[in-house]
Image 1 (cartoon, rainbow, N blue to C red):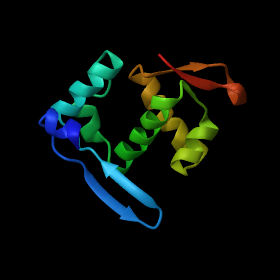
Image 2 (image 1 turned 60 degrees about the vertical axis):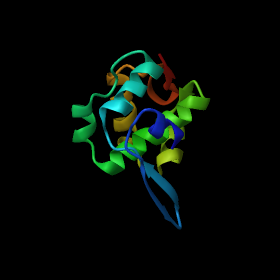
Image 3 (image 1 turned 90 degrees about the vertical axis):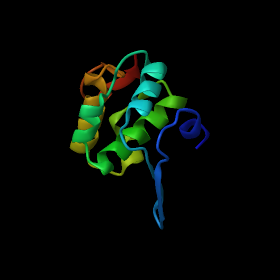
Image 4 (image 1 turned 135 degrees about the horizontal axis):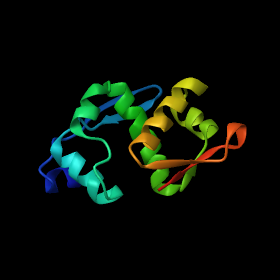
Length: 116
C-alpha cells in the first residue's frame, strides 16, 4: 500500500476466502514503471497485461513473487504455486521467457528456468 501511495498508483483489489488471500494489481502505467525499474526493461506492456484475465495476472504475479526469493523455478514448483496442470503452468512460464524475465536451461524433465 505504501508503494501505491508513493507511486500514485491505484490500490490493489483484495479478496479473502477459504483458499487464501488474492491481491490483484490492475495494469497501469505506474506498475509498468515499477516493473521496468525492477527488471531493467519493459517486460509486460499495459497492452499485454490488458489481454490477460485477472486470474492470469494473479498467477503471473505468484510466479514473480516466488522469483523475488529464488533465482530458478521448475515446472513442478510452478504447478505447486499455481495449483494447475503441466500445460497451464508451462504457458505462464513461457510468457515470462518471451518477455525476457526467465531463460530456459536444460531440456525435457530436467529443464528449469532461471532469472535473466
